[in-house]
Image (cartoon, rainbow, N blue to C red; front, side, top):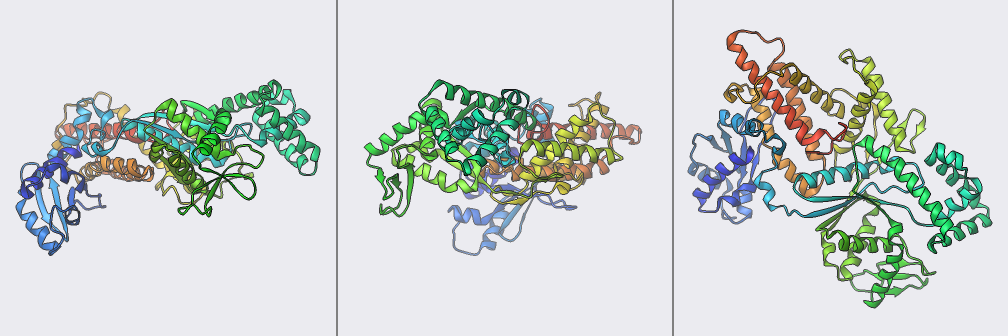
Length: 586
């Protein structure tokens, strides 16, 4: 494990500089693996020690580097120490490198690989509530909600793997004037029979039709207002119809979530907080935070000088509440109900100002816990289309991914005969969709590209799944190999060392992801690992190797090494219950 080597090097630094070894742990980083070059395993930036006051900030950096390097002695763990420009490099014993990294595998602790690192000691753990996906009810699942769904799932899985109690919440858009339109429209255009046959499609058709009708029909607009007023006043007919729409939607959405490998602990929604929102208004008023604008709306002044240059509207002129008012009520209710230590909202970047105002208002109301609330925003997906044109619904995208992947598989000479090719195409296609989304910074917009996404080579989800499948195949062919009884010193080839060096970075990559909640660090770590494994398949053959006595033990070592890599892949990244959740299901 990387922490073993990091600790040994830190001990040397602590003795040399008369400091606690703990201060050096975060300053020691694993060196990224360079192609066809076997270098150092860890490095220390002297600038880090200067910035923290361990070394004087004045003086020549290179002189400090060389002086410190000469004080550090090699031993049976660290076999080489060298100074570069402002950096000290450390190379560890190669036999020990293989032994320590493979140790969890031999001890049956492979599911904890990388998770016991002391890097995580600085992370606080507790109860984390993650709100994500949050589509609108009575509509088919729009493709625009894909990013929130998979990014939120990644964050929830990551937090859980690092020891947090995670509450996964889907905050549905289930309230507002649109339900007045839908209720009035269903009374005129709806069909109970069509609702049973294809529920969300029929509701969508009704919604489109009633919106068009309301554009030039004042009676329809009034009917919509009347229905929503009945809903707010809890009249049984309106509530019953609304509840039917909500239940149908959640049931349909669960099918989509199952395909994505996503689940929720709580299905909440705006409707749960409509009454509490009025209590929020009263609390704002009692604290002197609620002001009346020139238009007669209720606002909270968030400007630094309290001169009304930056206000947030929380109440319409007719006294009804807005989305942010219900968000304030929801946050307060969640804190009371779940006692969370942190709450994370996952939405697109257009809502950044909304959440900034939400957190400011909560703090102004005296809720100091709002400092533990965080908005993770993301950019837009551009050009997401199917063969039939512009995409509206996520189900269309998932079906298209499966169909295109099935076609690609049928055209490939390397595709084996499968019991259920459609199921495989579904898993690989959705995996490709998720990996394409996760490769770059979350806040960046990116252009959707079917052809690039589904390539079998390169940095794609298809390549990751191919690597995983190939490791599984090797596991099947070498079932009789003893997982423990092999000599790590036999894994001396440069290809093996490169993989082991790369795995040294795993806890650092996890720590980085925990800090900024970006999946790109883990995804790019995995893509690099898969490329290294592809090189290993060429250089370290298991199938077809010579059966000479001298080669048998080495071949078994390779087989065990591949089994270790398989377990590492499974436990760090790729699999959920259905094999498509590339969202860190440890």
